[in-house]
Image (tube, rainbow, N blue to C red; front, side):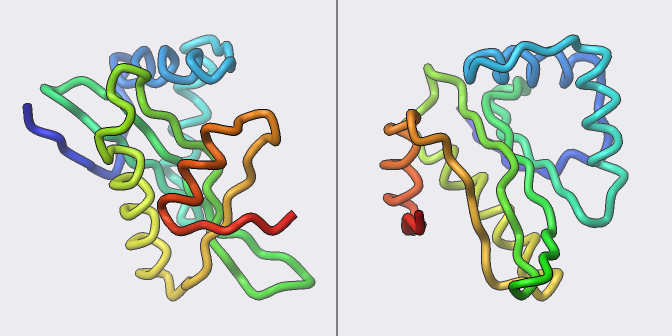
Length: 137
């Protein structure tokens, strides 16, 4: 089974259906039409990126990264969302998606990447620590 990580440069209705299904696994219910519009806006933005992981042509994971500008700190990239299908977790797919965002941010001259994670997502905290993030707050 071939794993492919690719930047999403255009969104199809099939992509939107698969991304919606994955988002539901995180507890985020979406109307496909609304999600399609939001993703297209993100895809068209120079300050955002979306990468997907595909296995046999089907999306099994996605990540959204964006360039963040704050008054109090230097520019950084932030992971806005990351999900890997439950049946494909622990296969380095999430790590590969994070690497794609790192490459994207480096291409913009941004070295620092941050992620926010809900305190109740303890498994996510462990995952992020295992791929090199450290907890700040």
